[in-house]
Length: 421
Image (tube, rainbow, N blue to C red; front, side, top):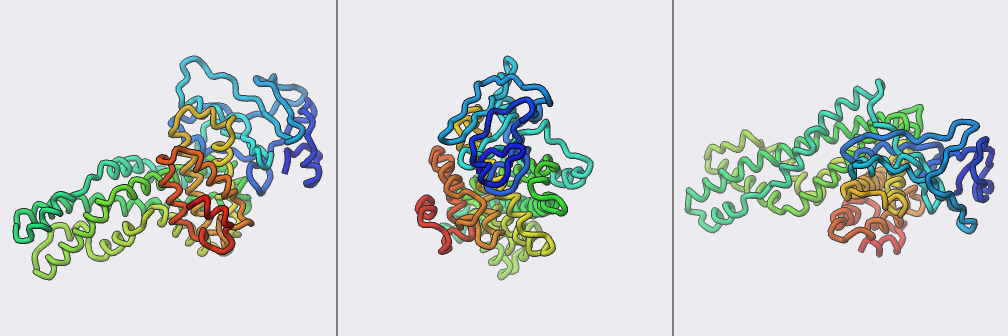
């Protein structure tokens, strides 16, 4: 698939080396990825930085030609084009603003030689988006606080060990119970937030996949919602990374349930029972037993959304996910774009979003993300992850290994399996 020009017809025309754009024949951007056509904005990349400043990508006006800031060159053998970089920013511009502005041009997939416009100006909700946007925004406002609480979660390991080693010492038993109860209150808060996040995701999926628009058109029209979708995935991967490295969570909750059960048998009143009743404790236990509980929640929610909306083509959901994965991969694997990242959190954001949509795609698509017919370039995505410092992506690789559905299917190539070993 090559760079499509006005008047080009069929794949044969696309493979021809395109002439340089002229005043009467500007380049027409095609979508980045393996399927679909039409321009695609990348509003969710705006969530990778704290501010949403910058101008939208523009085509030259008719009869004019924008002066390039970088020399265009054509490699005949590869039919590849380098588009102009954005102009140098103002003096004193911070790293986050530079990262944002760096994608106000075109994002080119070097493998498929297709390109997509980058960021639009400040992804603010339109009137039609505001209802869903406001509902999701209420949830996202609490996300950072949840992560801070999880990051500071230290557990009651010492108190629990003392109580277990001295079962006859009532003071130690009371001390351990007093330490665990408020921690279980935090765990309840995390679990309840996962339910709110699930509802928010389902609302976004409904808005981004509804007819009559295609997934690509939705990502162009509902830029603010696409940004929120990416922010949810970013939060989810961060939460699960922190949870996987904190065994105190399950230890504390297991001790709480054992002690509560013993108190009931002995008819001892338990102050913590009002905080978490038995039914809620069972649901929380299943939640925290998962290696990546937030991802499992969102994967189940996406699968349920598809099954409950049988009148909606499944491609509406899978194409939305595969497009987001493709754009993240291109931004990360293309040196020209990657070199413009001056803030490492921008890289982490793109990596997490890419992995998140891959996992959702794998749970929703009948044959998954690893099959040859998948619209996600899994080899390219895994290679992007493997090219990062190992310590920074091990959690993401584990998420692909252990929370995907089709990795071990016969349709998965041996090469992909070996890449994830």
